[in-house]
Image (cartoon, rainbow over all chains, first blue to last red; front, side):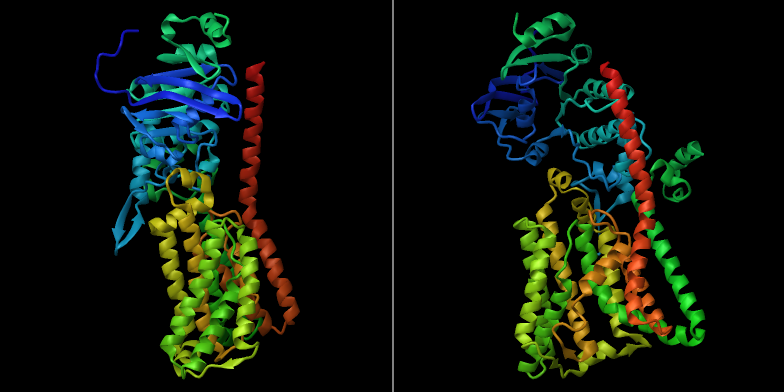
Length: 251
Length: 360
């Protein structure tokens, strides 16, 4: 691939990230720049994919190296720090409040308020209106922004989390095996949503196990093995066989 | 049917009730409404039954007010309990905190020649400090709230007995007496206090940002933390508010009885308050329920007590009746929850089958 001519630093980059758990080296000096569009990360179990994602999302702290947002090194102490820097993660448990509505969840922690007699009150009507707007862009059918999250299917719950990221204009979206718990139809709908988000110029990073799917879906592919990024590939010029060989290390 | 509901969605506020539970729209809110309506209906039925069974007119004239009067102290305590429970915790110490406040109030008044201002100040301070101790233990030291408040339940009761020497102390204050037994346009002051406390709590929990976030914290501490909500601060504040309610209730109790008895009228309040909260549709897991429902629960309980007393039913049977009512109410409330769980189970099974099919 030709180098990007624009001088702007990437929204998200990693520089020399290293992480050990006891004697197990999970990450061994990972430096990578994430370009706009969808970057897929593949690798065998234990290759370090999830560790990388957890460090990028602020859940874990690297032993060495740093995470850069817009070229500036960050010191994430928590998932909240990463979120404030514009890195939105889709967790496996999705971090939704089951007892609240879709709209309440999209605006959780960033509610729309207005002052009534000096008291900050929640403007539920405006939150619902804006939630409805962003939900239509998400294009996954949802009963209503008033529906309780408890009632939603797995795919709908993920769509809520994506809608939250989109509404607040997250700089980067991190997805760790987002379709693992979805049925085939929901997976298809979810992947087309992710493609849509990536096409609109967002930086999306996604870990996945399904290699044909990743080849078809991603704009850029990273292959990880033994805690390192072994290859950065263009999926258009890569075969399934190349990928498999890079992953197991026989090439 | 389903189509039309979806179409009506655009019309916003107006299209709400019929069939909404089917698509899960407004599930949480409509459940609250359903509980409130059921409780109001139960209340109406109780009033009619007791009214007919006794001499109707007399019942309505004298007992309606005395039901409210009897329930007012419990009601204020319950408001404190319900906000703690919505945040996902339990406060077992509210009864002894109320007793401690009453005791402290009496002791200060006795030693200051009935200085009411100083007494009230002490009452509020004691209630708040007691609430803060619970709050620190649960929110910051991460002690399970049942354990923490069970410990302070015992401790506050002990301190109340210590400061009063276990004796009844007379409070000589006409102002307090007026608060406890006086009326404004035939409405007891105690009832006015309950209405005021309830109105403020209902409004704040329904509409304020803080109230909204208490529901979020009670629903999922994890999700709230990731969303940047200061979870510990909210948990702490709810215990502080519970302490404030206990302080108000303690002052009301002192006014009503004219004496401070460290245990009489306050011990056991916590269990009745929790009963009322559960009657009112708030669960033990947090994130659900309403202040209004809990206060309706109080009214149902005190109507039941009052009516059975009026009919000459022995006091022991009143306890049995309270238990039966709670059991029925919780079973009824759980029907919808039960349906949801069944639906979720079926969906999970389908997902599992699909996943199994996909890997084959």
